[in-house]
Image (cartoon, rainbow, N blue to C red; front, side):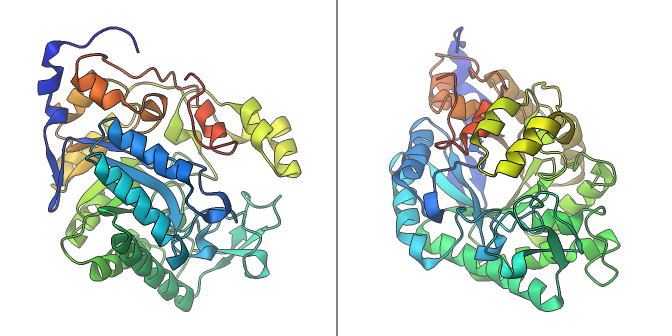
Length: 401
């Protein structure tokens, strides 16, 4: 970080207190959920606790523990964390550590749906809206996806509710439900992956049925005063995927369902993963950390075709997010290429209630305090995306530090 911020930085709008329902936040900056790779064997580690403690000490209003599956079958791979009684003590320690630094803490709850590489799945068959080949797990021994039956759907709804209730009991201040990035609820929303012809597919109203059922059950379990956020896609980023016109209607439906805020994102993990990140593709580093030999060969020879590169620009979701802002009253969280105090203030001026930052805070965990004190004006992040590979090495970190 170079240059010095003006003395008026401490008076910037982004540093004013914010509110998520009845939860008071010290400013408008949220550390978005970025997979940490710090839960070996699916157990929260001391490194995970320190990671979020450092973000809280650095000045964010709320930090978000990344993807926690709502059930063993909702994991993308076997070592991923899933919500259960056994991990509640460590999660409680994490919450206490964050609270001691004056910040709030949320946890992102999700189910990966069809693109699982979890070989412990029954009959090594993942679950999704419709039958399909699982291209994400094809080389990991999970080649097919079974269309979910009504009992599967009912069970997943209950799993989300139970996971949210356990999160609240562990001391989290909020939960974020993952409706984006191609995970299960996103798969039901996406016309390309939801080919059902029953009440759960077809029209947008039907494709919304499962996400709204999850929101309703979570609200039942945590009560009206506990903040519930939803992360959703503006666009899926591939032909046939969700587009902005339907995303606006989804945001309106979530508002009507009573969510406390919507986090606006984009991209589909199994089809357009770098639509979310933008910037360089660190294929060399991704190959180095890939444990599956067949996946490693696939990345080496076909990575340039499989993983499309998207040019980076600051605030790259802003144009689409404006359209959602015009259509709803619910608090909105803007993310995507927010690197500087100027970006944050632009978001505030555009009517967004919060900003979410990922890579910028991985590079500079103390960025918010430094911006507020006038010691910096932007993060050192250069969008090289090598932190994406580091998640699978020894835990997420910035290679520039």
